[in-house]
Length: 179
Image 1: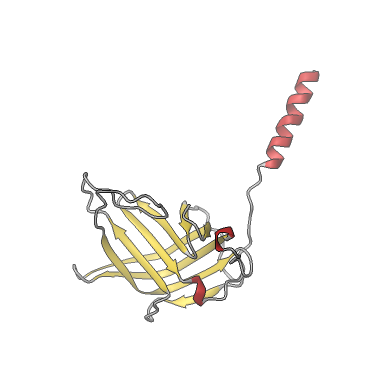
Image 2: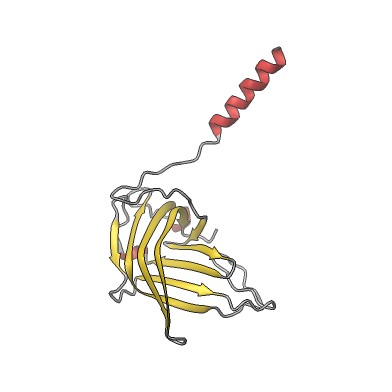
């Protein structure tokens, strides 16, 4: 009985120490029922695999925005050099590596993806804390949540359009260094 009590006590301590940090994102960015794993780095770069051959990337120049927990909305139909939303599709060539994000390694056979760039949609984002950029820059780490609605992507080479109703990058760790 003594060992059973000790085991229960130890398991309780372990489960209490492994709590996920939950940030509440205000103003209409609700946690989706099904969270798709997203990854990120830099200030701000995130990516999400839609399947094994397609990945959606979002880059926001954090120097041009006041980073706060308050939601900010960006119209993707207006030309904005500080925001980039791109769908990259692998042609699935077996001799090349295609998706190399947030990595310092340069692969020798890095292939070229087919790119679809955003032409319209609404991007909303919020960060986990107000003014998260730290000095020195390598100490910067925070979370971002991004929701994109009614996303229209266009490839000018193929004159082809892809439409995605909604994509959510939920609570993605970003910061100065790759990782």
